[in-house]
Image 1: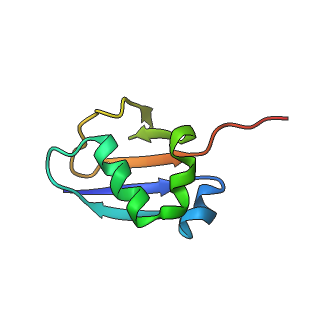
Image 2: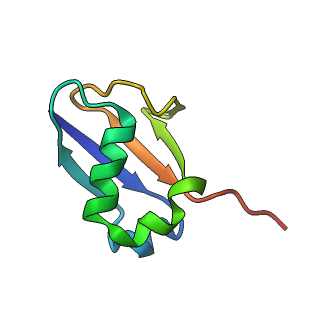
Image 3: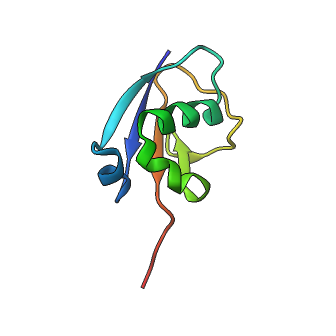
Length: 81
């Protein structure tokens, strides 16, 4: 199945792109997809524990099963001032 991954804020710089497509096995959950994303974009791995992740614009648990056509969004921690 194919999903889209979108990178926001300085994650775009770390990934050197704003989005990409991933081909995943049917039955892949979000945590497994994140392993693949970090393998493809190793600069993001350092932010692994503080990354905010949404699927189709909703925050979901890491065991959420992905479906064909899902959009995964990765955000850095929110900063304010």
